[in-house]
Amino acid sequence: MEKTQKSEYEIQSEKIESRMARIKRKIVVMSGKGGVGKTTVSVNLAFALSEMGCKVGILDADIHGPNVAKMLGCTNSSLSSPDGTTLIPVEAKNGIKVMSLAFALPDPDDAIIWRGAMKMGVIRQFLGDTEWGDLDYLIIDTPPGTGDEQLTVVQSIDSLTGAIIVTTPQSVAILDSRRSVTFARKCNIPIIGVIENMSGLKCPNCGFEIPIFGKNGGKNMCLEMNVPFLGAVPMEVDLMESEDKGEEWVKEEAHASAKALMDIAIKLEKTDACTTAREMNLPKEGCSPSSCSSCHLDCPSKKNK
Image (cartoon, rainbow, N blue to C red):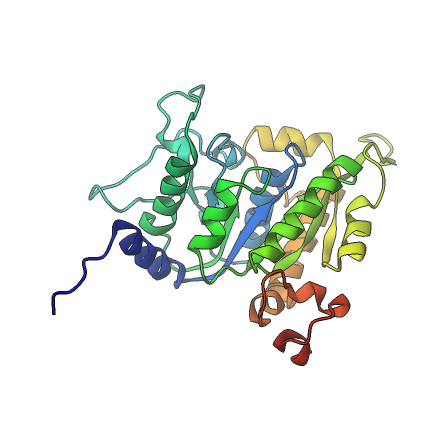
């Protein structure tokens, strides 16, 4: 009997599976709303985990606004493919491996005017064709919302460890973040936890924290939706200046935001935050391990409790 020829999609899926098998933890970082500091969190978690001795990669899946390279200080790098097929990730500080569409743009002012199919194709290419090697973590930074980019990531990586959702305390941001939680549950993606960014503005002179976006919005959402709360990160002027320069921030231990980001990374690495999310049995659509306590279904997840 003549063998059926595999489609390009199937071939790429096998390549993705092979690449991802060498990475221990694959974490997608999401936000319901733009401007909440999701990329800031992604980059600083990568820095923090690398400081702890982990081998880390970061994929910039924000096709229309690829800012990871700037925040990691490697904007002068370019896309490299010695054999015309395999993509070589750029190595940033601390040996962090980076892949971003920013490396392929001849001019940083160029706009990416693509529809969904093209975005899906390049994300799958970055996942399957990039020589990630053996990593402890792959952080996947996505754009705001629950659209093509997020769907492509979660549908392409069967062994996805889980999602981290970034929000601010502001009610409008919380409204959209709740949709991100729902997205993860409908896609059967474990929710590692929520990070409340910009929890307050730290005065550089006296240290007083001003709740410019309100207080405890992210933490309260976690209680209401039964998802883990990973921590709150305050705003600091020095942090914003640091990321604009592509400098590592988490080593600035005297700053509250640096300490908060490092504490979250320690929670990911030293506790069961990731392990619990991945090893839970997700039996039904819309189920998440973090919702077991309030769930009325009789399913394997609850029986494993």
